Length: 497
Image (tube, rainbow, N blue to C red; front, side, top):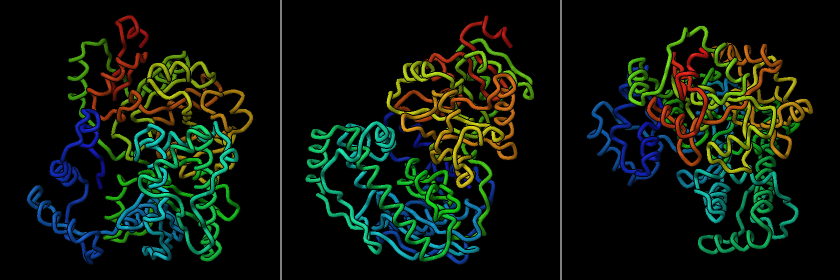
């Protein structure tokens, strides 16, 4: 089931986020690998009477193939997490800003059924609190909350003496702090008084303590120790690490498209009620023909060469081992917020000089950490406790504690708090990228590279060949591996291949 925000990517890149639903719906239906049919039984949860009337009228006009069924917001989140986890039985927790008046839910998934046990009103939303804090820090709400997570490692939560605005007593989460304009004024006063690093650490600590308390409570109450999570709050990779480190939790799965981009698949699952199946990969987005790729390269007039596809992992590994900065654009785009190798910038990760150069090339914030991709055979050398979140690690949706070897040998991808947001690469699920890392391991003795999303800072990740070549040029990368072609900046560099 396709769930790529095709036009949303274009709107963000052009800075014109206008109406695009009609074309997006047509694209989704026409490119789906499954045929459309009227689901039975229909899901009859109503999101909003007004919204329902609008959509029932407008969507068929835009796309005649479509009939409309409604699934409640957090039910879709829960089903997406449960279905893709592969767990036969799971405790499911969803949390975000709000959806249909709700900000957090706890459910149990068994076989092909999901039953909600508990929920929290949008009035007591962690997501809304973090959106406001993100905005008063000068970042973009609903997009840059991850910057607060990065900043939190640089601060001291205990230095903030103001009262925790959230309370959790084992039965209810209640937000007791200021609201509306008063909330923003209060947060601004906190920033002036304590600084953004300390306030970020304070907010992160509040989030972790309450959510982990909820997890422990419901694990104890249900006797279910496998946990699946979804919703924008669980884009917070430090929170996810704290969850899988809990003794009460035996395994954690984080829905790869944890935000609202994952609701479409969740809604389908809530409608058809399939049995859970482990998600093998997240490459469900756009792909392009060889003609489209080659025509784009020729338009830019850069030197290029077509390669033997079987040799590409080896050639790319040699380039990275020689200190080159490589862009990789191949196959279908990642589904969700993480770059997992198909729309990535790759380089070695042995020194902090690498991060300084990348921050300059990509205009990134210096306080934000970079992430590694690690071949499965080397995971135990570098990550502590990975076995409780191995599947989640394939999608780069949680942090792990770093081993001393990782801190010493690959400092470029270890954050100041000793954690790293690693991608675990398994041959069966990502064979070409696995072969690249295996060859790099042979050349450098370690199957680990720095992997950051292929985009200039504040721009969306690249989606099309045109965006790939344009960003390759503006970022000043050494090589672009784009499907079966390699592109360089001058003719002499192509001779290397």
